[in-house]
Length: 99
Length: 310
Image 1 (tube, rainbow over the protein chains, first blue to last red):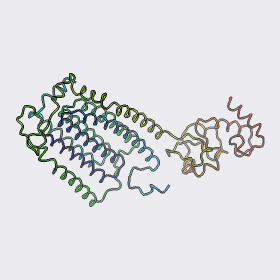
Image 2: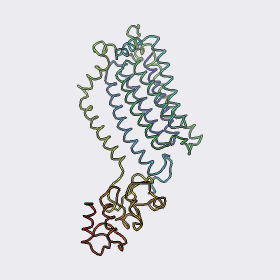
Image 3: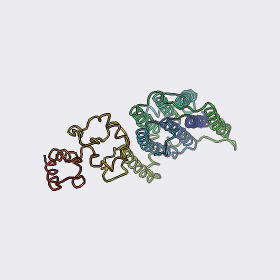
Image 4: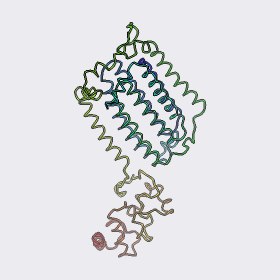
């Protein structure tokens, strides 16, 4: 397959995550959409690594995975706290700044 | 790992690569769209797992078997289990979309997504999808100025003895050693941050007037708000009474007034309160030594030490 096919798949996945962030209202779903976009970029990096014949793209994907793991850990802890404070995960809830 | 590299080498530049690419890419895109479209969060998370697994297959096609395994272990294993764990913990696995985006907004979002795909595809189709971009070392490639040639990983993989792991590790521990160490620090900080965020606040409300529980569960630290009642059972950890729940909805405003009763669970003050109340019945508010209106502070102090010893 030409390497552009992988890029196109990554572009479609990235756009899917973007649409999900614009459409959905649940914090956890938004978080999963961010993960989808991160993985789309990872696919681009791996494809570029193969295209240029170097390992830098794969090393960068490794770091992206590490950072994504840390981000998920802290973000989910924040989400749990937000849920216990406000009782909902709706990002459109109106009383964010009223306390 | 050897079977993976055999698969990776067998699929380079052949028709089987095309077949596997179509299968994996179709599953990845379909599962991604399904994740966005699913109403149930658990179904969405499982769709994301399928998406990540098929991405691991695409990594395998791209001759990076190490990242394929890392993707399966870290992403589809650890991270998605964490997601599902939080979803189950919060109990939001039922129909979550009480507030929907308007159809107009949804249409605009889809248009925006299609616009992103169109723009990226406009730049990609042509220079990156010609026959020169096929990573086949045996193919007769026509190099032109406006097409991007695929070099492929074959030269690197031929040098390495143990495949993609060695390629990545060589770069990771020579050129990128410092970022590697920094990522270790990042993971430690993230772990500490998650522990700090997930912990219940056990600080003494006497010390902090702006004390507020981080988790408003029905059975948060509740040692009896009125204090005069039978306090024997209240200091042990048990489900709070419904009346107490109503009282404790806004504990931050109430905390300075009846502060001596707001002792945390398992603290020494709870036992001290019991000992004082047993000995000095007429005193309305027991409290800490020196805080309440205790007629005989010295006796109370002795009682407190006795209560702590007992």
